[in-house]
Length: 69
Image 1 (cartoon, rainbow, N blue to C red):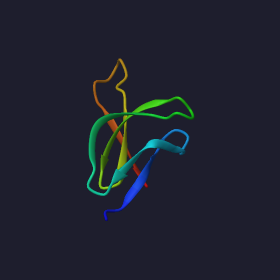
Image 2 (image 1 turned 45 degrees about the horizontal axis):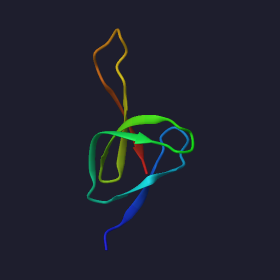
Image 3 (image 1 turned 180 degrees about the vertical axis):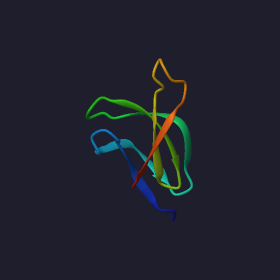
Image 4 (image 1 turned 60 degrees about the horizontal axis):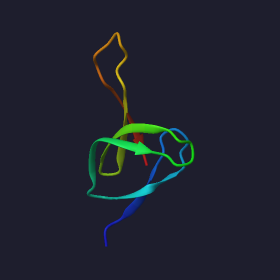
């Protein structure tokens, strides 16, 4: 059986309602946390979660932050 982990909220670090497997890949996924009520865009590949920050009005670049589970 493949390893599974809970997907944690990048804001409050609590469990969300989703579990991911080792081979799960998500791009531009909108993650909602039922506890803190925040919605964040994330990318996931091999349990590495990267947070996508929305671009400001001045810049048109997206910035990524990698969060290790």
